[in-house]
Length: 295
Length: 148
Image (cartoon, rainbow over all chains, first blue to last red):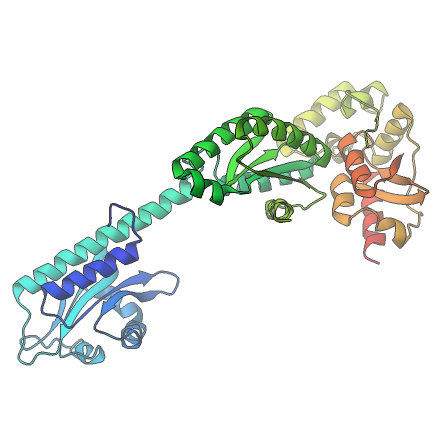
């Protein structure tokens, strides 16, 4: 599941379910730090209602970030300051261990039950520790993936720039062209029947078509223009210092060259926007082309 | 709507040197300053004190035969000012001043900006007649008459 790029939350939920079966636990939970809120948020829980769990994290707040080691409340252990935790979570016995990453607490994982005269075994606590390490790995992988996504500028399928890069560059280019009292054009081509085509011919064929189209798209615009994939079924290009009329001319050339390679099965929609006529930000130009294509 | 516009390949700086508004050394200094600070060469020349906005506007007027118009005391009606959206007028530093039949008269700081003229034709579907004016006068008129 982890290797198949499942969302981290789903993997943690799976881990919590496993943990419940491995340790004699009636309740299991995992909370991870929400940096914006400055407290832990419940990511997965079994056998504890969400209100109780959320209120526990809310009440303890940033204090939980200072837990140094595993906290156990059972027949043998009644630690000062945390013996009420079991009661707050609605159980008689609990074991909670911090999840650490690079020396910082990023979450908690815990188990609890309502058995009388119960003590967690050494094995129980070891298993809990191992599961905490697993969650650390998942958390780190998730952060790394987010970082990579932030840094990515190339679309993996077409080899063109991705939507984020195009948006940023378009804003920069409009600012530059405004300084020099020049226009800036933007063109977008959409495969109108992409979903139908993919359903009919399959994902591989649909991706092949998009790839072929991207190559022709880049080959038709001028070398100074900047081409990108602006949506799952859309290609766009920043047309440097081109006004509406010049952008329309480029659109006509694109229509011809793409019609040749796409044939009759793929239906294309073209739209053009230019600064300052249709807007003075990337958002405005992109929303104009989007609206034109939706008409 | 295919129209023919005066095609001018000569840069403004060179025109100003040829007409004696600035000398070659001043042009080189202006280009150097532009390289570092950006901006339009005309604006840089004015900022460096090598010429006044009016000198540049006169020069363009004489060189290319566009009449010069001082907008200082010129009233522009609401009906006319609304013909060109404010963001377009500000972007290209131009202002509409009159409309007779299908001919729209526009005061521009840079009458050599063909792309701006094409955009005006596309927005207004009018023939564009150009007057030259200074950037300060144009910006002043946009502000004075646009938000009335």
